[in-house]
Image (cartoon, rainbow, N blue to C red; front, side, top):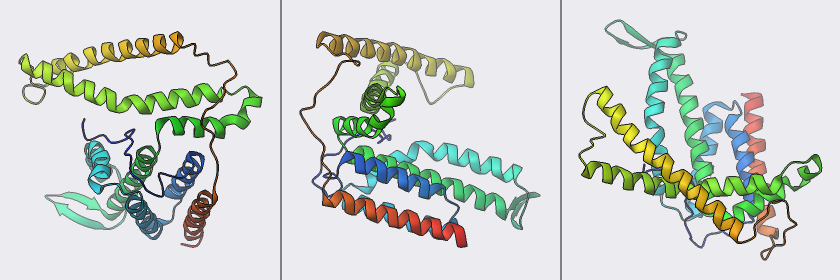
Length: 266
């Protein structure tokens, strides 16, 4: 669980860190749209170069980004196995004792894997380079036009911010519980299936109890400070869009147009 990097802010003095959070969210949405465009491996190659370049510009360590990819490896392996048995089109690539692996199964798995990895990298970059408070303000400002349709912009932004903020906290809490259970003789790695289920329940139950307790403490703290989601609120920090924000939006828009063009002609 310590491999999960989503939701952790890494304070470094980079160009991406200094961008307006609203522009970073819009840029992330544009890149997400580009990921799902059917541009084949040409487009994915361009997006991979863009993602690696963003990691370098943000001064983040690639080891930190790779940590966010490790938890999905088991799911990717499971996906590969399912595609091998389900997709039976294309030409035969591998023949293992009568088990045929077709080319379309490998290509389809590769597409899904690359898309998933790019999505995780982009979202991790957003949370690692944006403070939780700035992320809340950015989401609230972007949702502000929907207030006329009775959309609770502030409440939605607050919930998203709190959820991202407590991801590292829950990971640390789960590690503490695992160590406490291990000291009492609970083994989460060895044993039969029923023993592993009991061991996992011994982890999940106290984790849920601790999560509800933290949520109650947070609600009491917010209420004690006079927080009201429906009250008219003022801000100490005002977001301002500068030239570098427009430059970043232009560059990401160019990437989206390039991927869209490839998807149209390829």
